Length: 223
Length: 137
Image 1 (cartoon, rainbow over the protein chains, first blue to last red):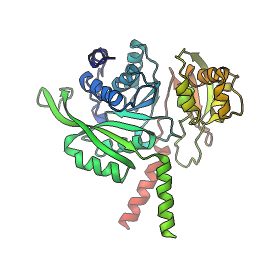
Image 2 (cartoon, helix red, strand yellow):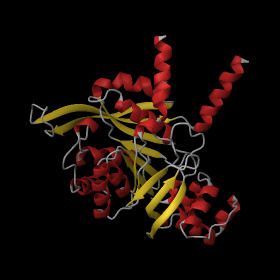
Image 3 (spheres, chains in turn brown, red):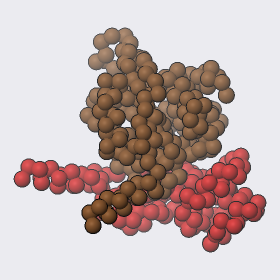
Image 4 (spheres, chains in turn orange, purple):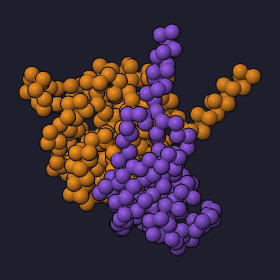
């Protein structure tokens, strides 16, 4: 599928009718979503035939983009029932099979290594501090191959340090810097459109085998 | 919800040591056809908990999966098709997932399990409080 075509499919999706401020519900625009998933597939082969999870899926844009690019199975997770209903209808509209789970990303517990790639547009943590990092921490535990995520450019150093030091990332790279147009959804937005600089990140988790090996090493040093 | 998803979901209620696998209560199962992808199945075979998959499949009304498996079975087309059907084509549309330790039910409506915890079930709250107390004292 061509990028233009992907963007046009995503542009037709229904978005939040009454976004919830406490959840920082901003729609992921078709422009950003299409580029994010197109890069994940064409530069890194992280989508086609993979099991992909969309964390905080909202109306399902990123997960559905993965489905359109040939993901074998896509799972969308969100805390908000209304968003999941819209996402469900969007999946129906595109004739894509997507599983959905209503849950809180910050206390997620999953078994095994089934999910290969996590894609997400997490809350930026401006309303609830640390929400973005909770998402990243959970995603790094679940993904076996890669995590794609958007974070404010102003948090770049912090994100990199946390990913490598606290969340077991083998690598953490900014793939590109994007302008995120946040439309005037909420009353506290003074300008008509707020333009935020965001980074598109690709994190690679350590292979779980490597992780257990490094634990053994540490133990043997202690002996 | 497909059984592929069921195979990774776990109960995360405070105090639960082993929340996997969640038991399934069936009200309604639907089947949706999915393209057959051999490479995907061979890859997934090594990642799924077979016992959990086979039991879940039986409860959902599909009794064709063998109880015990080994990698040699991946050469059998017949086996792969059964595996494919159970893993990707069966959907729990209405029913519940039940925590194996506490019996707490997580309802499944329109195919979507609601795994939200009540406030007193959230595992990290107490840990966080405990930690903070330690810091303060």
